[in-house]
Image (tube, rainbow, N blue to C red; front, side):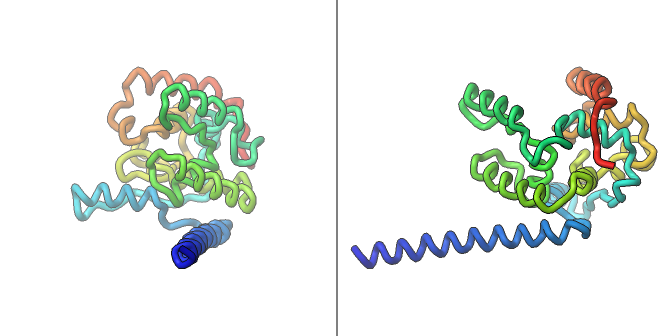
Length: 232
């Protein structure tokens, strides 16, 4: 019995050690990306694999642009659409989380996350798109790492440069070129609202931008984006 307990303890210690090493690996990347731009993300890797399953020579469309070269309209539209209290909170929107928990309890499964921009960025950089409580826990840890070490400006800059905007399309510059044949810097108010409305389900909205749900979402974003507070 003692041998079994000892081996069990050793196994637990080894598992804990691996978890801690993984957290350190993540934190090292978070620190590096304070002033270095990520060349790829977990979501980009998954997207490329998905594209290459159908077309082996497929490549992602992605070009990094600095914060100052992204339209103020897009910054405001994204904040209005995804995280109205982005400037105020420290990574988590308590009110949004409470509403998500109530919805999950009502449905009996994880259907809503109440995620902030910081949480979405954590997921995009390191995690998969699956819904599970374990993944949400890891997402929370990474979100804390990012919020403690990055400025709000940096968080929004990276977010706008890495999120998906359609099949194989990542970042504001690629999205602006794909949908409006312009640069991220020159997006107008209407174009920005339409891009922001795609974020929750970009691959579907890429081919359904005349749907009622999409047009309703665009109208709501346009109504509120003028009130959005964004980092300077």
